[in-house]
Image (cartoon, rainbow, N blue to C red; front, side, top):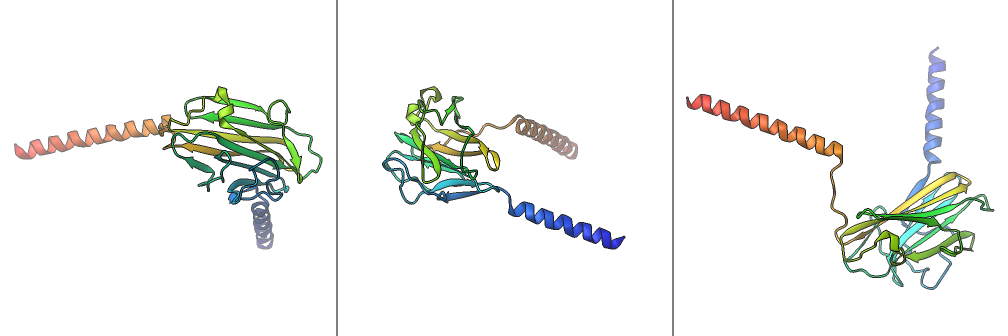
Length: 219
């Protein structure tokens, strides 16, 4: 019986290790396998790109930078810019390990002021995606996204999502954040508010007990 238990444990351990080894990974400040090919100024080095590599060998990549300037290094996918940073551009792309891509690619944006916008990145009327070097890729500017309400003079965060379907590894999503100035002010979640209220309540009870104890000793 013990032999079966040990064999089962070893098999489970091997499966867990294999699963971990084949998991999707995100590399910060990296370069896509096919690098950047398209457009004037889009091949800046260092690339400083967020690159998602799937367990099936697909890649999604995103970065944000001042137009016609090198992309700054990100901190875990957050690209920071000073207030008033005009003409911010985002670059996007993906590489499908299937070879012949038949899926969809959607770019969506949200900002901390509540603005949101999304579109089909592969529709020529929207983004004119190009396929070069095995990757489908292009770029655009936040300034062009009027529905987003982008304002470089206000502290805010703009989150860009690239969601691609039909990849060898299935549907995948990669996101980056463009942080303007100090970014959005942190607003506590409802659960955090509840914990804070409980904490304040407990503090009040403790203070009342302390006052009663002090009054009793004084008497």
